[in-house]
Every structure is written in structure tokens, then in C-alpha cells.
Image 1 (cartoon, rainbow, N blue to C red):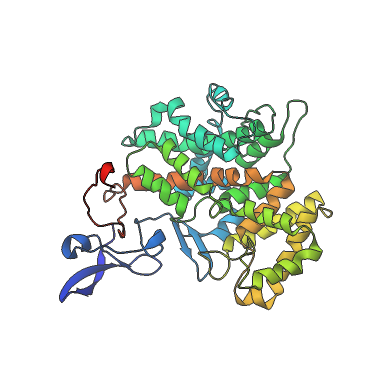
Image 2: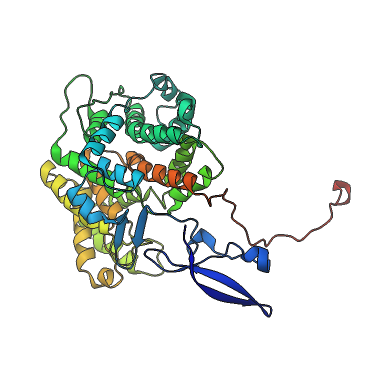
Length: 431
């Protein structure tokens, strides 16, 4: 629990109020306004909560000006280079890197819970064949509390632990099943001898008629996609999970709420929007036309996959993802795909054109992850479900932290009411 480091003074209508100032481990100081309403009868106004800290957290830190992302204090570049997704899952959940024995135990527990309840197969068949995989995931994850109601007591630490392992283990299976269902292919069961990312790729692309062997480069690329998207501080979907959890809702319902929020094109749908933009451009010769439109202040068109709301310099995840994108494209020998040609040329221009360099509109993680997933053979409808399964561990870690916070209370944002003042009802005969 943070303690004030000094006191700020707020003067309002000739009265002065003390506002405690909290100092974080990193980042700007924070004004503690929790008692301001009781003392001064005023709220603060902050649409989007972009200047408001909604909680204390020890999980993830972002410095947008420096282009820095830390998981539990560890730079994302170091983790991407030396670690792997399940080790990062352990780090996010428990706060420290595991010992070899702890990691083996954790990996065993996750691996042996990847199968879903057999009755869930029937649940899938209640959806239309052409349902978007994200719509299916929202429904199925929300329904997990009906299949695994023995781990939904949020006040029981062991229930919280079991639900965390179940969610991390089963969400790749659910995402793969949603994909298979959408293309009319049979579900593929997980295999315990495969890694987390290899298992997911196999469940998506294997068919009963022949064996499927996961290429190590694709396995590594998918693992990195998962790792780089595992958590990202108090974004919209994470805040949604915390807000839902603050009411005491079960963890599966909270994660389903996060998936629903992530579905929005301004959030998890950004890499899909990027690929759709590349297809709209169509061919390399049309790029100058769209670059000109992007530079035109009077044209609403904007290039997707460039720049970032939080990172004002560069997206540290993009550097790592670019390496994977190059490895995947070289492996698959993709040279004739027009969409990927457009992507590579846009990347070159963004890194060299003074307009992009000056405004720091560098390719972000959505740009490169979209290229990788497209090259692997995923349709754009699967981009956001893959984001959701990657972010599940972050949501669970944030949810567990929120539940354990002694200062936690149900979320209840205030409003600046600008509607009609109090007025009397008029009978319909007199209107």
C-alpha cells in the first residue's frame, strides 16, 4: 500500500484542501483524491480515465516516452529474447521468475488441463457456422462457470488458483475450436508432448486425415506473439476485467467481459484493421496515393499499424515482432503475396520518410503481428481471438491482484451530468 510522500494544496471558493501525493516506483506522481468529494463536494472530470490511476498494481509498467515495457520489472526485450510464454505467465501470475522445479510444475499443470469438458463440444454446435470466432469465444468462456463451477468462489485462494490454471490452459483450445467450427472442420484435441504455442497451431491447422508437424520457427513466432501481448497495464479490456471483478463476479465471467471489450476495432481489432487496410491498398504502385492521403489533414483516412496511443517514441514489442516477421516470411518463401509486398514497402517508407520519422509513426506490434498471422494462414477473423488467448494470463493476473487488494471496492465512476434539471411529469392528455 502506497503512503503519501508530500501534500498538495487545492484552493476552491476560498477554502484550501490537502491532497496527498503518492510516489510510484516509476512514472509520474499521483494525486490521491479519494476524500475530495467528502471534503469539498466536487468530483474530477477525466473522460476515458486517461489521467486517472484506477488502482495500485505491481504487474506491468509502461513508459511511453522511452518506449519501455516491463513485466514485473523485466524489460520485454529481454524476456522475448531469453524466455518463453509459459515462463512469462508464471512471472505475471506470481511476481517472480520461477526456479526450474517451479517452472516444470507450472508447465505440467497447464499442459494437463488443456482439454475442455466434452459437453462443451455440444455447446459450440449451438452457434451458427458463420459466427465470428470472437462471438463464439465470448459465449464459451462466459459459460465456463457452468462447466467448472467448482472453482468460482472468488474468496477462496485455492479456487482462484484453479480457475487461473484452467483459464490459461483451456483458452487456446477454445480459440482453436472456435476457428475449426467457423470453417467446418472437426475439432482437434491437444497433445501433452507439445509446447503451449505448438499445441495451439496444431489444434488450428491439423486435420484427422494426415499428420501435422509444427515448424519450430512458426512455433517460436506464435510464442512471441503470445508473450508480447500477455499484459499491457490498465488498458480498456484489462480495466473491464477489473471492473467486472470488483462486483465479485466469477473469473470466467470477468474474462468473458474482457474478451468482449477486446473485440472492438480500436483495441484488439487493430491488427485486423491493419491487414484490411493493406488489402484496400492492394498493390505496391498504389502506396503513394495512400501515403498522400495519410498526410492530408482534410482526409479522414489514416494508416493503421503505425504509431501508438501510449508509445510516443517506438513500440518496444514491434522490434521483437519484426524479427519474427522476417524469419516467418523467409521460412515460408512468401514473395508473390501482394498484401505482404505492400506491407514490406510501407514498412520501408515509414522507417525512411521524414514525415513518418518526424511524427514517430513507426510500425507498431499490430502491424507485424498481422503480417505474421497472415503468412501463417490465419484469416483476419482469428487475429483478435489470438490476441485474447495471449492476454488471458494478464487479465487473470490483474484480476487476482484486484481481488487480493484490501483497499479494493466495487467500481463506480462518477459523471458530469448535463441533462435536464428536475421537472414535473405532464399527463399525456396535456402534452
